[in-house]
Each structure stands twice: as structure tokens, then as C-alpha cells.
Image (cartoon, helix red, strand yellow):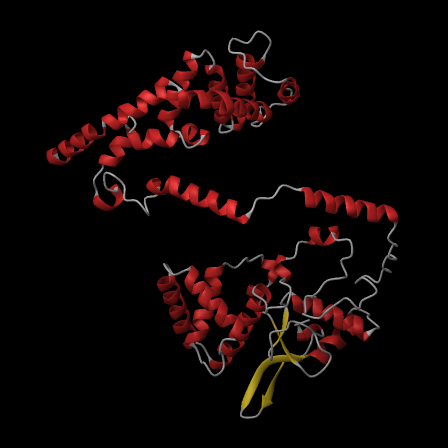
Length: 437
């Protein structure tokens, strides 16, 4: 279409009042070229095809931001190959921020930001507050490079860059064609009924799909449909819902529980090593003797004790005293299986099966028949998630039974009280470390 030697659309420079408009074509020229070269008889079909090309940004109007095709004297310009969607360039918000910031530095009379662009710039400036200085410097450097170019070349490049962002960050009310999932569109029951088209025009008046296939007749609502709808609505009414006051109370309770563990709210004791260069806190965390602050957190939830290496060791000792340590060992083995290299997965699956689940296993775990049946089938084609159902069952078993007994046990209570008594001793130890350093 751009090749004049093979009968492409004529590209010319148009003179207007006190200025020239370089490298433009008219909408009529494009429509006529499509009808001639693609054997299209209906002008409406040619306009529709041209609009599809324009929606992807290959052709764009120079007077507005609406990427559509008109069969008149509206001036259009071809997009540079660098900005073509077929090059699969996915721009990021930082690129958009640099572009908008650059626009504010250029000729404001000609490149003034639209209202939605000004709002986007303010939102991006808040989002990238920490790196805004870097974005501003990038924009400033690009402006300096652009000013060295010829005025006509710079004018064309500005319009092409603007058209690129009209595709990837479109005007509000227009669908972003780069984010439309064709698989999702195919799943829609009536894809021709959408609120907005690619070009911002309602399509509800269309009676045919783009390929001119007659739409399916609307089926009348039957009594069975009404019954299904009533059943669905009754199920929604009977769903268990929490009052907003209960949700707020839960959030407040959670926040109050973890407030002393949030370093942004409660300063760390001893001081944060990243701020003070005092590594005493790391020495305590690496120690196998946990602090009272750490032991107390184990009682918040079962996940807290599983996340802490020392907590798992203490819980494992408790389970060994109750002759049920195989549950935790199985859970840890399955967690480790998920991180194994692919070539070692099959061997590790067989080892776990023989140790915990096979008939006569040395550390057999207590598994319900349903989970055992599923796991037995999964082992035949072992993978990282072969024991997912069995692991979930053992997790719930430990959480509801063993974990509750651990919190009530003398082992945990003595550990918690011992740490409370030893808090002052730890403080003296820290003081001695500081003095010696």
C-alpha cells in the first residue's frame, strides 16, 4: 500500500494555511485502493476493512485520536515499522510515563496533553514516585535528541508516537485492541453485542456478525429456565455471609495481633541491621534458642510454626514424644518434593511412597480411604504434586489435633515461660556484645 512503484496509495505533502502537512494520504484514497486491489465491490466493506487496519495502528488519522477509517478528505499517515503491533513490542507503564513527561516539555501549543492523558500522568507520577527522577531524566534526554532532528521529521515522528499510544493506551470509551483475548471473545454467547466497538461506536444495532453469518434466533424463555433461575437465586440468598462489622473486627484483631511484628510500625529489638549496622538481631535469629518474641508467634497459627525452622524442630520433638512424627516428616518430604529437579522427581516419589504409604511402610501415616485411593492412582504417573491430597489431609489432621495439643503441652509452655524469664539475660548478652564490639 505504501509502495508508489507498484501502484500504492500516493503519499504527498499538503499545503495548508501558513504551514505544510507532510507525508499524508486521504481516507478516500485508501478506500479506493482497497476496493481496486482487493476486488471489493461494496464501499462499506472497504471502510470496515480499513477501520480494522487503523484499529491496530498501521494507519492513523492526524487530526484526532479515534482510530477509524472515513471515506472523505480526512488526512491519514502510515505508521513507522518500528511501532507496528506485528513486532510484538509490549510497552510498559514506565515507557508511557516517559512519553507523557516528554510531551509536557515540548511545544505546549501543539502537543498539549488531553484531560485523560493529564490524569494518567498524575497517576503514574504517584505510582513511580521513587523513580520519577529517572523517568524525568529519560524524557529530557529524548527531547534533546528530538530537537536536533529536522522540523518535518520531528513532526512526523511525534504523530507516529502518539498513534502508537492511541493503540496501547486508548482514549476512554474505546476498547484496547492489544488486550482483547480472542479465546475469550469466542466463548461469548453473542459476540456481536458489545457496549463499545474498537472504534467507540455502539454495535447493538448490528444484525449480522462481521463475516455476514445470520445471527441465531433468540430462544423463548421456558418454565424450566425460570425454575433454574429461581433455584440459583435461592442458593444465593442462602449463602453464608459475614456482616461488615464482623469483618472489620477480624481485620482489627489481626492487625493488633501482628503490630509488634511489623518493623514499619514497631521498631525491631535490637535495632534494624540495615539501618544501624548492628548485626545482633541476625545473631539472635540464627540462634537455635528462639526469643520469647519468636516463640509467642508460633501460637498465632499453625502456618507460623511451619514457616519457622526452629518452630518445626520443636514441633517435631513434641510429635516424637507422642509417636506421631511421621505426619510432619511426610508433610516436609512432600514440600521438598515440589522443589526437586525434574530428573529426580520420579525417584523421590517412589521413596516417599515406600516410606509412608506403601503396605508395610516403616513410617505409615493415617490416611482416609478416599485420599489413599487418589494418591495410589497418582503414583503410577508420579509428579511433583502426586501427594497433594494426602498432604492436605495430613495438614488438617495436624492442625486440628497435634498443633492444639502442642500449644497446651508443658514443652511449649515451659519454652514460652523460659524465654520470658530469660529476656533480661538476653538483654545483658546483647549489651556485652555491643561493648565488646
